[in-house]
Structure formats: C-alpha cells, structure tokens
Image (cartoon, rainbow, N blue to C red; front, side, top):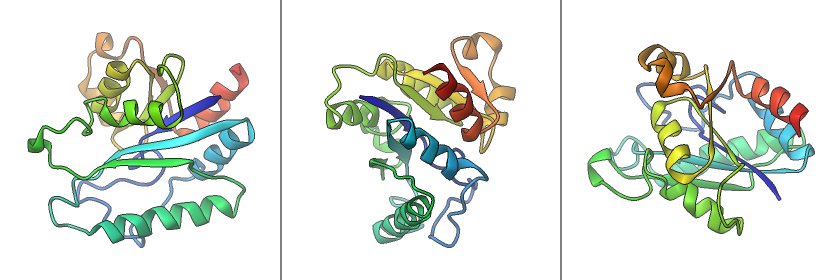
Length: 182
C-alpha cells in the first residue's frame, strides 16, 4: 500500500496566523486538490495530520472543523479525489500531549490505522519545521512545501536543518515529482 501524509493548513489550504476558523475561510491553495487527486489516481491513500489548537483556544468549535473537512471532501470529490483519513490535535502547545506536532503521535496513529509496521518510505508533506521534526521522529520522509509558512521555514532554518528534506514549491510540484519516481 502506498500512502502519503499531508499537513493541512499551508499545504492543502491557505493558512493564516489568525487561524482558519470556518469553512468560508478554508480556501484551497491552487493545484493542491488536483495534486491529491493525482496521488489517489496513482494508487496512494492520502492521510492528513494537522494541529488544530484553535479548538482549545476557543476560536472555533469541533463542528466548524468538521465543516471545513466536509468542504474539502466535497471539493475533492468533484474532481475525483479523496482524503482517506484526517487526524487532528485539538490541544494547546502547553498541553504537552503526544499528538501535537512536532511529536510524532498523529503520524504513529496513521501508521496503525493503515496497518503499517513503520513509516519508512512514507512521505510527510508540511510547511513548518515542526512538520519536519514530526516526520523525522516518526521515521517518515520529510517534505517541505514553500506555500503557507514554508518559505519562512526555509529562511529561518540553516542548511544543515534541511539537509535531508525534499523541498518543493507546492503540493502540485510534490505530486509531479514524486509520482514520476514511482
């Protein structure tokens, strides 16, 4: 089974330092949904691992998060794509939970859900250094996109911090490059 794991905000949809709080605010990055559909058509299962501390902060409710994901699912369905599983951490950074990235908890749970012994050979696409750290901690291959906070991540990290990281302009570039290698 081939699987790819994606962060949500900044990878699939536009991000905001003020949080994405509703389905109306959830807007896909150009080409991201088509990239997911390309992964699906190439035989990949797609999982999402996303920190959503806005819930614990009281900025939006769980129902709002579900509505964002329903919107994403409907838009994907309209172009022949799908996300197979969505994992989210609703906790504040101060909760020190096992699921909040950069800890690997969500990625480990995804491996269990998909009955994988390990995440070796599995790409995890994110736009922040905590995504890279989570991928490394879980044994996945870290991939960074320049969308969302990705360009800022590149500027704030040293070359040694990103030496093992595949870097692409956006999720469509990830699909175009990784699917050619398959």
